[in-house]
Image 1 (tube, helix red, strand yellow):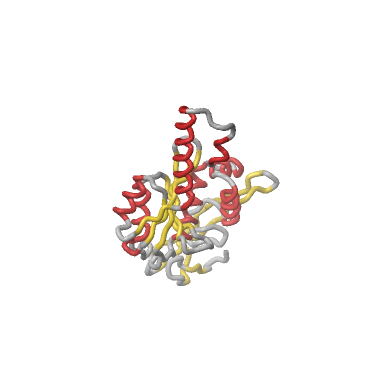
Image 2 (cartoon, one colour):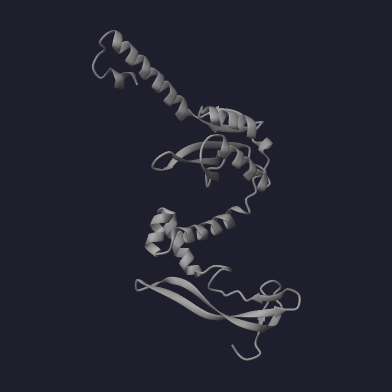
Length: 237
């Protein structure tokens, strides 16, 4: 920069003189499979109102050690695979990649307005091998982008977290009129405690599953009393 050049204060935008310069480095997307870095001498300005502040650069977000293009590529990989797998491809630790993901997810979620949400559906799913579960909440009135909230775990705790999430985004747990879920005692008691005005609707899949299991148990009991025709199981089901 030219001697005596002025730079905008990152808080108010006022043109200020440089206080000093700091050397900064950002990881950029690979160049011919080799790590690529951007090095720059970034000015710090001395604002009369806000004190000494470092100027923001256009190629990276504030506080990040990666360029915007690197983060964009990283998020594109995370969309298609696990964070661990994506981190191995771009050769950074999974913790650093999680920080990128959490920043942009938080930025996308922060403007949510859930004041008009009334029916919700919730279910648990195995997130990986072993007893690791995630509970997902959807707005059953939305056909596009219905997912409202997701959190690790199952049972009552996710419902408590969902209730807090509603309140943090202009919603009210008392406004929820219907909760569609399975017949898990933890879900049912959690709905009663956290969504006091919600009527529970058991979804069709779990109703069919319950009848199927009961029917098969009766068939097994009858087969112990007398022989049944071959392949009867599939015919009965």
